[in-house]
Image (cartoon, rainbow, N blue to C red; front, side):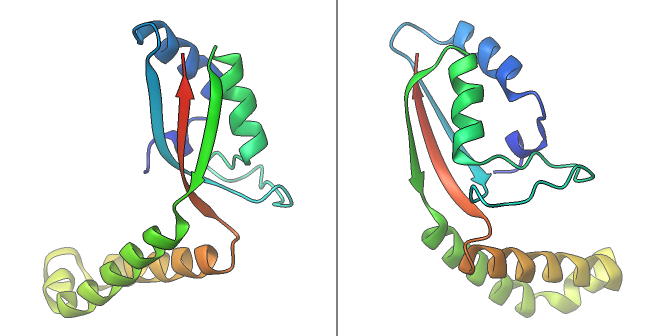
Length: 130
């Protein structure tokens, strides 16, 4: 996670990836999507895709038989563990990276965990066939 949500024109990227894949190849992506009721913020630096908008971009890229699997529960467990581990190394992080950045990282992960639990954001695995 962390790359595709920065790409605004996913269809163009998917066209290139489609061209690179062997016949019957698969594209597998782990990314974030939002519920269909999500209000997209035009000022956000991140792409805020829904399942429907992601599907359209993949289809425009030439992909078919597209499936989405919600991995939010396992990713929430990962984030929870990350936050617990962050607490144990917090002093070292503050020493190495400063207090402001350390607190920002912790707050961002707390926010992410809240969004996942409230289903405001979903971690998904997407499989698309050439």
